[in-house]
Image (cartoon, rainbow, N blue to C red; front, side, top):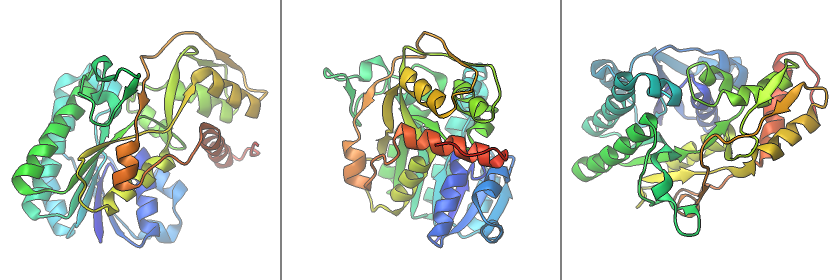
Length: 322
């Protein structure tokens, strides 16, 4: 089976590549600026040799279609997008990359009769009007995006349904919460809007400081990147699902609790927690996700944070913690 992964050398993409290679699949990474740094950290030299790297832009229909056809792709994992902060500062580019680029993926897959498309949506499609009376956001809750990024993802979910109806395209969108893990720093540099993860995890792990961590009065749904990759692979391997977009949740925990855990692992770290909130955080229901594709989170915040910190420290030649 041949998979084309857009954004395949990026943060989430590199972990998906690793997991697919472990299962003996053939992988083509389609990326506008292929950077094999993270792949090199996660994969052996033999595994790296098995990957096909293609420089390409999802907004260029001809480039994308040619790559799908030339490499005899069976399934697509679409992860390339313009992230939150960058989308807020450049509306036209956000529309071109996140809407037209994603539509190009759907169109190419439909015209070539590919077996499946799994793509990255986001819980940013939801908003205050999505919350149920019990305070939980159900998988089928109405969309109420509060950002350009969320609006683009909401549009993508609707377009995916059109491709299902017109072409019978087998498509699954995965709505991720706050994704963290080793390699996130590459994504932060491209504008995710979660730069505070650098202050909370990366800088303390690498013995840099001072570290000022905001949002001490908030709670987050912490989703470890290896759980994300597992959800993607499960979606790729699932049969046709009744639901076409699923919320992929993690571990809902207060920022203060996570801060205290990091400080416990790294007692010498120069860290300060500031009060305040990032935005309203909700509890997400994962029932449909578990029922239809078999995903439930496996990493607690403690397990994910410790693994993240130790991978950073190992790469820097520092002693491991915990």
